Length: 99
Figure 1 (spheres, one colour):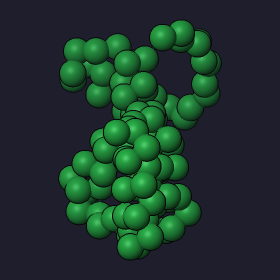
Figure 2 (spheres, helix red, strand yellow):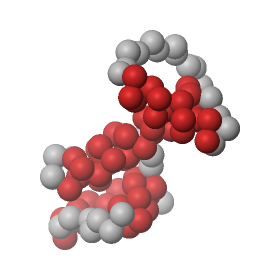
Figure 3 (tube, rainbow, N blue to C red):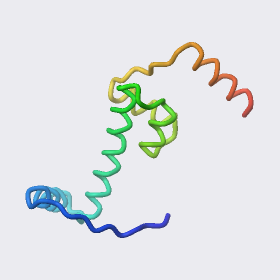
Figure 4 (cartoon, rainbow, N blue to C red):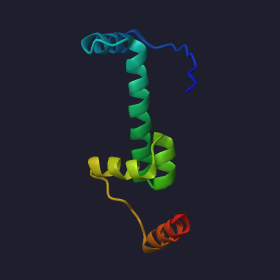
């Protein structure tokens, strides 16, 4: 996986929070920022799905996970899938193509 370097500006309060969090968990600040970005992607995907702004597939892309993992995440957060009968039929048709 290729990585890029990103320089960001943040206020002192946020930087102190990140530094303290990293120190508490004996990790560097960069790793904590990456973890928070990953968590933020998941939370953004959940919110978009809850507001019907994203399908399960789009939410999974936003979160950077597979559809099955996204469904697991929804379950962990108590979010019910808003699937219609047609969605099930479409999924079944896709599965038949693969198998």
